[in-house]
Image 1 (cartoon, helix red, strand yellow):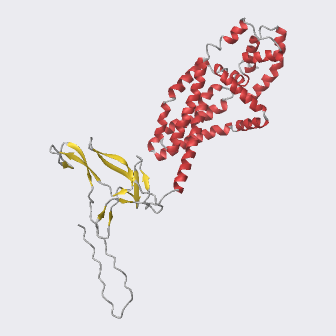
Image 2: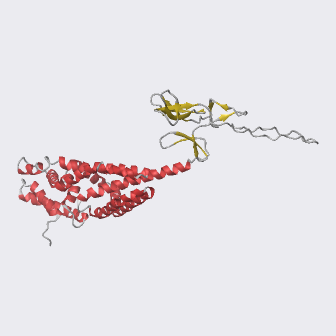
Image 3: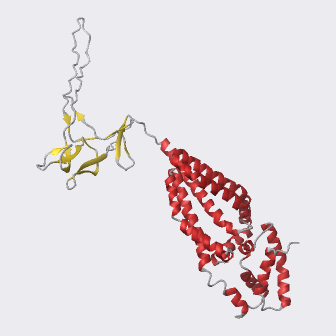
Length: 407
């Protein structure tokens, strides 16, 4: 038999200390009643279970002793040595355990959001945001390593969480659900590793510089596979498993969103010859035809004369609007002034003016912008002849339309 005390023996020793003001015979009777339950719980947690695992399920030995007092009808602990032992360690040290706990929670939430953003946009640059929660996580990790996980597990918020889980376990459906989740744990850690590796490969296929992320994602996956099965014995490994799980969940949600967006875009795809306006990467309205964007539309009458103040609509009466540009008078630069369906647009010419105010597209001194309303080309409209009515015995010669040369 090993001389190293088991988790149950260490836990019961602290319970005994918390009950020290009671008669020795009463203490032994209380401990004999709870020892089988603790031994059974230790067996569920597996070989090598730590005291922290018992604290997570039952609370601190001091709070457990207080529950035993209440259930046995014993008076609360007095103001003597026991009160000092139970109150002194917890009150001054609540701040650091809380920082350790909530630093982990905040870091996990931030990683979820970062992974979601990177996955839904398939953009590795979004992962640079990891540097933002990194200081919070490092502070949390340092406080954990210095103070241990036991003060964190003894926090009131953790006690409330344990109480909620215990009540859920007592329910038939809730117990089955938690048991089912527990059975998935081994597969979950392997799935995390595969998800991280897949995520890195997809980013690399989209952006070659993402190959630099692969080693980090691979290390995170190996850490998850290693730390996950050991969580029961060492709760400090939550500071490895929780961030990795949060990143995987965020990436999975983002990947699902990206897939839904891709499918919806394909289903609503418009042909390359569509006249409906779209937007470029800057949000500017565009008109496309034959796969190329169109910035202006010119209309001519049957005599080849250009028309002005033409308003365009589609077959449903919807205006075909485009972004309209003009010249900003104070700075002499091109600016967006709105959207409408009036054509043709004035051509915006960017250039410079000399000292006399003459506009020049190449040489001069001051930047200038000019709106040119003229049509930059002429159009030869073919003449359409009426079809012959009734063929006669002597066919009359018909004229061949001559195209008008471009002026």
